Length: 292
Image 1: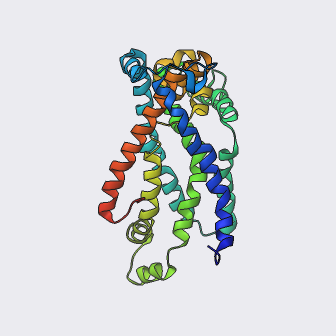
Image 2: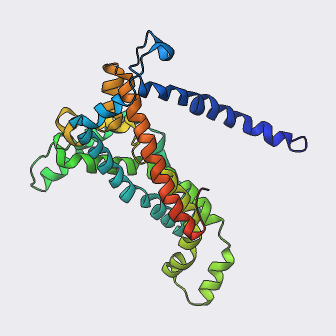
Image 3: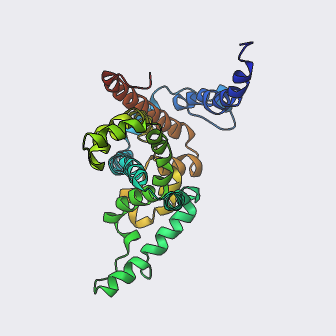
């Protein structure tokens, strides 16, 4: 420690961040087993054991919320996770440096917009007077109120998430690509490999460890879709297909004050995420990869 004291000093902010904002709040999970009363506090609130969990799993609306969360999370994993990989491969094929940097900047930009702004853009584009319906009218098709239709809501959520985050997600993959030894590509060209074969036999295999680690990090947050996006896109007509755990927790916890119930839901989310992460990490270790 004396020799490398500067390195230890550098990690202090990160350690403090996790202690203060991650580990200390873990003590608050005990209220999932209490009838928490805000004026009595944790120490004076009565214990109820597993009553909150029993109520949670006997509450019919929770299953609809859980189903919506799983479906949207699955769609985002299937369609959203490969998107930055594909985009990074496409960026890597652009040989004009100025054009490559310009296109990258355009794809990065949506990441810095809040979901309030992105939600407003989506509503404007898909409104009855929006661009999408204007094109449909020009083609002789009927106007569709996309944001009021249950059948379109999940697709809108997934596509808007990809549009906002795909550019930012390419950063790590591009870093992984640039770390590949150029001599491998030169040898492949000499052997007669075209661009697709170079991607298939060199780029993707050497990107695999990075892809696997990011997949494991994503699967650990499988049920945590994020409150901002859904809340800003949700309408009363799409509650049946768009109400997820985070929006339910907001209504039950913040608006109705059911702190114990919502803490039990959060603990359930964490246990599901940890279980999925553990299972997939065990599978990943068979390829000599994994988080631990």
